[in-house]
Amino acid sequence: MEINLGHSAITKEIYLDNAATTRVMDSVCQKMVEVMTKDFGNPSALHMKGFDAEQYVKEARKNIASALKVDTKEIVFTSGGTESNNMALVGSAMANQRRGKHLITTSIEHASVYNPMIYLEEQGFEVTYLPVDAHGTVSLEALEGAIREDTILVSVMAVNNEIGTVQPLDKIGEIIKKKNPETLFHVDAIQGFAKLEIYPRKLHIDLLSVSGHKLHGPKGIGFLYIKDKVKVQPIILGGGQQSGMRSGTENVPGIVGLGEAVSEIFKNFPEKQERMYALREKFVSRLEAMDGVHINGYAHRVSDENFRQGAAPQVVSASFEDIRAEVLLHALEERGIYVSSGSACSSNHPAISGTLRAVGTEKKYLDATVRFSLCFDTTEEELETCCETLEALLPMLRRYTRGGKR
Image 1 (cartoon, rainbow, N blue to C red):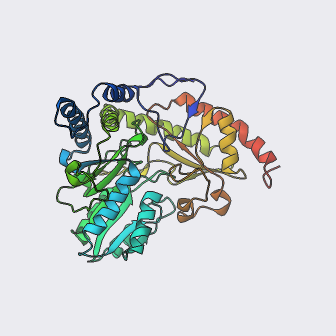
Image 2 (cartoon, rainbow, N blue to C red):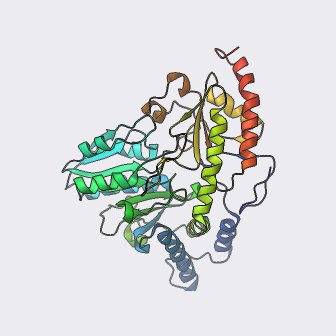
Image 3 (cartoon, helix red, strand yellow):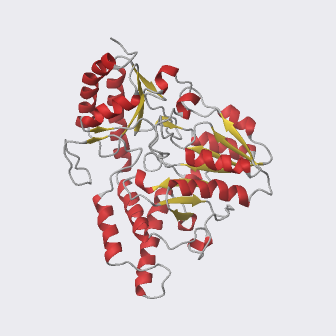
């Protein structure tokens, strides 16, 4: 099995854990090596090496701002998605607490949003956690009812990292700004950026978090979009780089790699997106035809005239009756197929998903759920091989699983 779309060919492996991390593009690697070995200056240096490094940073910032249709000055580079979320939440809460101390988020956020919210509660802030429906979509009625005069921030993820639900960001943004124009809207777009068209100005987004390694860029780099005039208190202090918003010598190779990945991935983006949606539709249909398989979240995509909703193109969450997720994961791994039994961003210790509980998943499925996640390089042949492997494995695993089918 070969993958040739923008990467060196690899054989005999089928990687379906792209929501955890992605393989770095060849062009990204090449540019990063050039920066690390040739143009390796410190952007703050006054000589030519420093000037060249600064130009690399400016070019990457320009690529990212263009993809979002925002100004370059609104992009702050970070070490990744977790830092971006922490800066957005803790930084904006601390900077705006004179206006109020009420925050809103959902019951299915990633740990890099949930844990900062817990921290802010310990600092005296009040947090409202919005419920979601059986598909994982946030309740718009609950959101509208929760926004108050002292609400300073609402944080909602664009795409759930476990079940792939796309939130109606356009409607959420409209409700927030209509109910309280001063309330900031933060979007964790770590699973959404470069999978969906997300334009902050159109969607009333004030803060948006992105991670490089989810889109074929390097690990250890990300960015936070901060709308002009939005007050955010820096959480890393030092030499005052990036206009004082994020001190520390810029990770030039990482920034260059991220900028290159963004530039490449948005070439012919609508076609790439449609192709991945088509692959997902076929894959889900095959899974649904198997005995004892349940799709979590939206099985298929749903659209409206403003923003695609329902299922994201890259994530499929499936529960397999009478089979423990970890057992199925390792059985697939032995056959060269790599998937996940949950979010890989917290730890390597499996735990029952809070998202699955929040959407009301039956108890028998809580420890029987596997996440398959595609990328633009995924092929129809790979997904077909995965389905054929599952069809062969499931009866066998159920036969030998304690309490399973006999």
